Amino acid sequence: MPYTPHTPADVTQMLEVIGLESEESLFDSVPDALKIDSLNLPDGVDEYTAFAQFKAMAAKNSTDKVCFLGGGYYDHIIPAAVDALSMRSEFYTAYTPYQAEASQGTLQVLYEYQSLICRLTGMEVSNASMYDGATALAEAALMAVRITKRNKIFIDKGVNPSTIKIVQTYLSFREIASEVVDADTVEIDESVAGYLFQNPNFYGSVRDFTAWVEKLHAHKALAVMSTYPIALGKIKDPGSMGVDIVTANGQCLGNYLSFGGPSFGIIATREQYIRDLPGRIIGKTLDKDGKELFVLTMQAREQHIRRQRATSNICSNQNLMALRATIYLSLMGREGLAEVAELCYQKSMYLKKALSQLEEVKIINTEPTFNEFVIEVADADALLNTLKAQGFYAGINLGNLEESRKNQILIAVTEKRTKAEMDQLVAAIGGALCV
Image 1 (cartoon, rainbow, N blue to C red):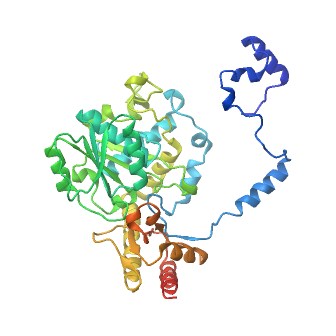
Image 2: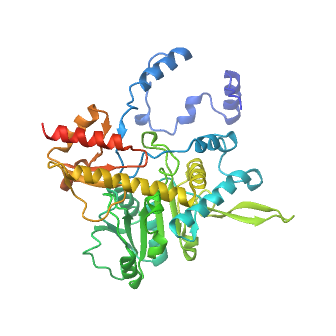
């Protein structure tokens, strides 16, 4: 589609039609105190010069570091077919599939996506994706409140600290009480709508929450689990634990780190709660000629129904990112995903064992871990800066997130990391701490 700007004559004609003398008159309702006289921008340049400037700016990015960062976003291998298929113009330029007759390709992909997510999580229904993992968990908390008609949410202390803040922000505007608690000590009663927990948790530890979920159900509270999709290739899935609502961040399924985004959110639940599920659900049916087709079966967003009846007002469900996840999961299959998960686990165990043999390093995790673990050193900032200069993004300084975890570092290992890279990291840490 060519870009055709409006000519001055076009603008004048449009202003005459609506009865205004200038474009500035369109903004008369904006208070003067909020208006600016200029944008203080430099003079314009030609296209070639602009590209040269952008290229120089991009060159400042560090793209050669070995990445051991995790905490919700992971450096996984992405098969070339994911890019090749998702960048086809039929998918790459497609808009929201409001018209089923013109959107069968996109609708079929999202239907397959929903099916794959249900297989992966052990749930019965999934929507067509959410904005990201954090907002998906917040929406799951609101689901628990709607379903139980209760007004209190417990959030496990093992949930990502940034996600906790987002969930609490959501709940505060609905006047819903929330509390961060410890699963090993908290008492559940009939006032609790749902318990939000993460497995593997933010610090990498893995637990079987089956008994804990049974305790919640005994008090008619809902179990809401945030999970790491790749880990489900190895650990017990949420459905097998009896969980009611599952959420996740989908970046690890065929999507790049991309400086923190875009990503997409996953949310799935049991069939009995389908009408409280936010977003959209794609269904399969037959047309009048008996041919298979796909449609937007349920649309609970405020774009589609009366705002006061909507379950969510998040309008971006990241279709393209969910498409990439569908391609990735289809390519990997059950065995491929299990192999990736096993590689992540085994490589993480190798690095954890190697680091545990350094006198200056303490392993914090006491429970089993998947591909992340926490170490403690004398000065986390100094160590991470030294390692960065040597070519490593070695982990997340947890002291920047929680005062109680000063000098603790969260390290993640994916299938992408080689034995040589891990050995080099151990040597670099040992050398830096022995100085």
